[in-house]
Amino acid sequence: MTFATKQLALFGGRTVPGTSVFSDTWTWDGHNWTEALASTCPPPLDLGLVFAGTSTEARPEMTRFLATTMGLEPTLVEGVEADLFRLPDGAHVAVASPGGMGDTARSIGFLVDDLDEAIGELVCSGVWTGPVSSNGAERYAHFRAPDSQLYELIERTV
Image (cartoon, rainbow, N blue to C red):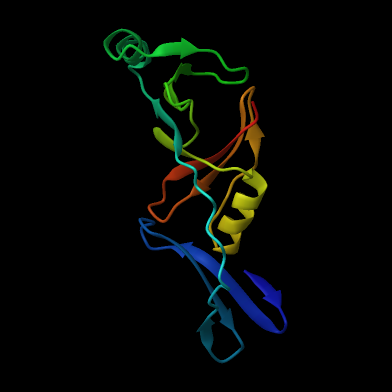
């Protein structure tokens, strides 16, 4: 909540018991609640799916499956603490240990040209975004979608 122009602004929230997340904004003028409709925000330019990750207790088995059964090539990227495989189109699949991907067991990454611009567009639309991180190949930031799951915006740096 924040006070601005003699109005109280309330953003987001959760249903009880916390199954739904909202990204709407409401203002209170002392008498009435009014939904504050966002100005039109351009959508982030999504260039495709570029990352899929899983966090699993079966990490060794999944790593062997991707390498031998699926025939994927293992790759190393500085700063990535997961078993990483590069697909022919340049996308990556990661296998991490439980908890190795934060508070999610799965992650999907969307490729964007300009990470900072894409984050701004999500924030303009009322979407929570996390801090920008990087590894040896990309800059990325997580965001929480309406399904309450974490996703990523990814900008390639190499």
